[in-house]
Amino acid sequence: MRAPWIAAQLRDLLSQRGHAWLLHGPSGLGQYELGLALAQAWLCDDPRADGPCGHCESCHAVEVRAHTDLCVLMPETVMIETGWPLGEKAQADIDDKKRKASKEIRVDALRDAIEFTQRTSGRSRGKAVLVYPAERMNHVTANALLKTLEEPPGGAQFVLATESAHQLLPTIRSRCLGHALVWPAEAEALAWLQEEGVAPDAAAALLRAAGGRPSDALRLHRAGRDPRAWSLLPKAMVRGDVSAVADWTPAEAVDALQKLCHDVLAVRAGAEPRFFQPADLPRPASVGSLTQWARDLATLARTVEHPYNAGLFLESLVSRARAALNSGA
Image (cartoon, rainbow, N blue to C red; front, side, top):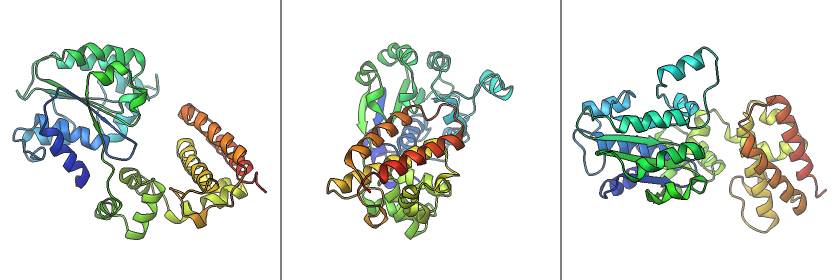
C-alpha cells in the first residue's frame, strides 16, 4: 500500500512538467518508492492525476520487473535486494564467481541505459529511467550521464532518487528539477506502519529507533529487530557486551552506534535524545571522548561496506564504544 505522504507527493509531481527529476532527502522517506511510482505513472496506459492505474498491462509489466520501456539503473546489490533482474553477462559473471555484485552503479550499465533511451519505445508511451541511489554513481558514471540529461532523446524521462544529494556532481543537480522528500507527521507514520503489520508498541519504538523515518522503521521490523533489544543497547555497550550486536552486519552496527553517540552527546549538551528514550541512556561521558568517537564512527561509515572479518570488526567497534561511554567515570 502506498504511504499517504508518498501518494500526495506523487500527485504533486505529476501535475508538473519535466524530463528529469531529482528526489532527495534523508534515508527512510521513500525515495525509491516515489521514484518507481513516478516512472510507472509516466508509462501507464491509463494514468490518473494521482498516479498509475495499477491495472493495465504496462503497470503489470512494471510490477513483475519486465517493462520494455523502463530501465532501472542501480548498484547490482540493490537490484538483487529489490528484485530487479541483472543483465545476462552481469548475472553470469556473478553466478560463476568471477566477481561480486557491484555496490556502485557501473559505467557499463549506464552506457547500456543511454543506448536504451535511444531505441524506439515499445509501447508508444516514451521511455523512463530510474536511477537509485543516485549517489552511487562515481565521477566517470555521472559524467557519462550528463549529456543525455541535458539533451534527452525524444520521449525519455529520468528520475534520480538519492539520500545524499550533496555527493552528486553539481552539474547533475543543475540538470534536474529538484524535489525534497516530505517528512511525515509521527501519527501518520505510525498509522502506516500498523497498516504494514507492525504492532502499535513496536511501531512507536521502531520509529524512534529510525529517527522518525518510516521506511527505515519498516526495514528494521522486517529484519526482525526487537524494540526491547534496541532499548537495552546503550547499557550493553557500556558493559562492552558484543552479543548485543552479534547478529548485525558491520553497517548496521556502525549506524546504531552513530545514533547512540548522537543521543549521548545531545544529552550532554542539554538537548533531547532522538533515537533512544532518555532512561535508556548511560550517564554522560567526556565530551572530548564522545566527539572523537563520533569522528571515528563517521570514518568507519565511509568504508564499512569493504570486506571485513565481521566478528573482529564488531569486537573492535564495541570496545571503542565501551571506552567512549565510560570516559566520564
